[in-house]
Image (cartoon, rainbow, N blue to C red):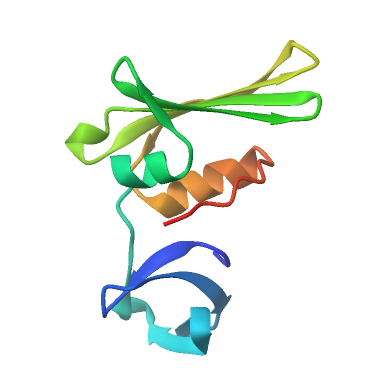
Length: 124
């Protein structure tokens, strides 16, 4: 998906700029075959760079956007994957979110943010 973070065959982390039928354009207008890019593993380091704090074994971040408030939690990354919970409240009234979604890669976290209409850009 456009905007997703991936790793190219040189080990460089870049965002997808354009998706073509048989190629992917990454930042700096570099073109790659699909087999020359791979997903980026979601790590403790990436979560911490993006404002998550480790609390009682899970990673937590709160985002306030006016009347909307989001609590984002990732649990269990030690196994190479984790579980994502996103709780949304609006004017202090629960509005739902995502409950216990298995997550392994950075782009999966990006997609969850997009689904919830969160404007949290990720830093890699």
